[in-house]
View (cartoon, rainbow over the protein chains, first blue to last red):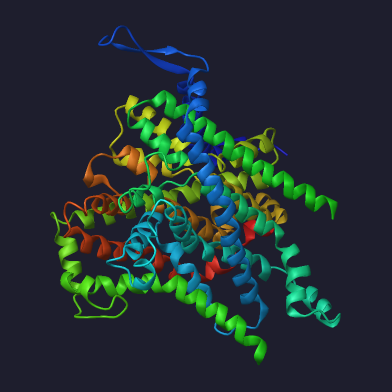
Length: 288
Length: 275
């Protein structure tokens, strides 16, 4: 067969060009930027960009607040991601179990928060946490949810609220795709609802759970909108609270070279964590 | 039956958790300014929603409406065009064998893992070297690219467009491009709606890129506009009411889109995860 070269170019080039211009080139540019530094001759002399090798990375390594912010989002992720996905899984299993009436309503009700943009959700919850406005006064008048100790978990709640329904829907769709004969067999063998869910349904939807976990890891490392909004509600959120905030505030100084080095390190960390998680689950899947 | 009580309780608790904040927003947005902090937060007082909306849309020469229109332009345009581009690319990667196919796919797929800041900051520097920051295009063009859409389109095309059908179309003398638009894209349509919805939500929610690119208020999308008002609440307390009402209004387009396209996302959403 004659290769349809023209058609292929027509299909691939438009996306390919945009992907190159707005993904590959910026990544290359960030790497290049991170290898340069700004040098001044004297205190008031003109600034010049000169090659600095790995000097910016040296500064990243020595930057305490940046690594604190990485630690903070890792802590956030270790606690929030399992809670969020656990909730999503339980709700999806219940929807799928046949024990619940009004499935269409619940599915929609749980999904609605996903329609709320992250910034807007953070503003809403910021109000809900504020003692003078909140409907939950018994809570907010006794506990300061916006204090330095709790504000991280207050934000975890916002992220959980937005994304449980979305993750639930992905897992639920995976459950719907399982042929019913599989369950029939289990029922004939005398397996109860709980047993079926634990030993049959969860293993079958593992790919969906892995996918949602990877996306959640990426999302956690990229936390920006929520902490940025919470800075107006709570003085406990500093300008280096999350890695992305650090990048943003470094670039507003402006110190683009250091900010670029931060971004490169963050991108590498994100990819490394996602791949490590994928490899881990694949290996475990292979042993079974 | 007894064993249904616990599941229904959990579902009920979930419904409260997910919907009470939105109920609170709806109720709060319907009150007058004085009543907002003095009356029961979860129940209506005097109904002033339309007055509030009027005030919101009139504030500073209707800048909020401008933001809404901007968001629709950024989001609707980028999602429509972006879905088409992702669909074509994913389709080609699924249905044609050519050297470098897997390499292209892997590069695109790893694009999914790149954090937004790693892109937004260099994009700002690149656009500023062309003196193109603070323009509509500086937000619109980068929003067109959706690597995850290519990934989904490839899976859907493999699943829903049979090779025999393409062969038959070739024998009938239909060109490859015409076949895509007249046959394949129709078979992929439910999947394309899913990709469109994902893309729409992603761009509608995008905060960092406009935050970095745009300085001029008239170009803001609604998220950035509400954010900028919220940062001014301490100096200008009258903005608080507008932020609340605006937050409610900003949710409406997505809720409508979800409701209208429900039958697509209900079934299509999981397809990417199952394979």
